[in-house]
Image 1 (cartoon, rainbow, N blue to C red):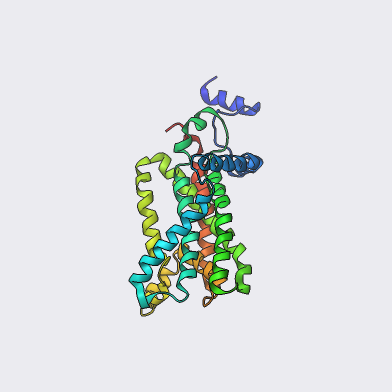
Image 2 (cartoon, rainbow, N blue to C red):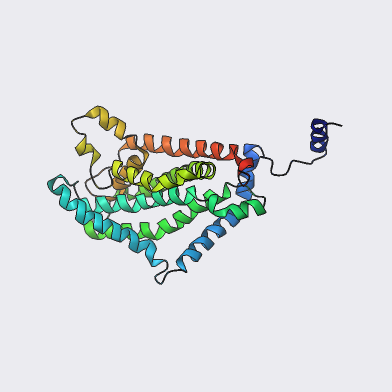
Length: 284
């Protein structure tokens, strides 16, 4: 009996190759069945990180506040009269939500490389690792989002009825973050030099997504470039959040199109792309 016949005989009797990649649907079912472990792993990672500092979980709130305050002082002075309307709530919304995107991208990129020992020791769907990093960032986002709502309400003297859109915007944001994490995890596992470019990529995204300036005002005289810029997923999602929170801005129905296309498209592409290399993780 040759090797191919032996493999066929083993499969016919319910045996499978060690580390073999299951069909995509079965793979996703395995991930879902282990969801409680993924959530527990995310919570444990947060607790372990917070235990190393005196202020612990308070840093989740303090860092975005410090960043937004510094950006407000610097860019508020630089932009002067070119500042967007209602600048402080505008800026805080952008900075707070961008923190989730950049953190999902960064921690997702190291989800496999930082758990190489676990990958080589245990058999489980490797997608659980980048998924746990996104859940971890979502858990961090919840108190930050609560603080953002309180600060915006204080600065504006209240909230808008459009805040009812905010939960849907956050769902889109998390789905998009998952897609980024999955793609970054596989790329960084196979080409670890790319990990050095992650901070640079985050800076490029930050400065091209209208976090502290208005893309509409900047490109008002060039409708073609404005139409292209509106397909920036970070810009589109944050624009929806500003429409839900910040007085003077509306939830533009058109912004749902690039937001959903990017979030769903990248998460589906990321899932397939990550799953396709499942057998190689821990072996390359």
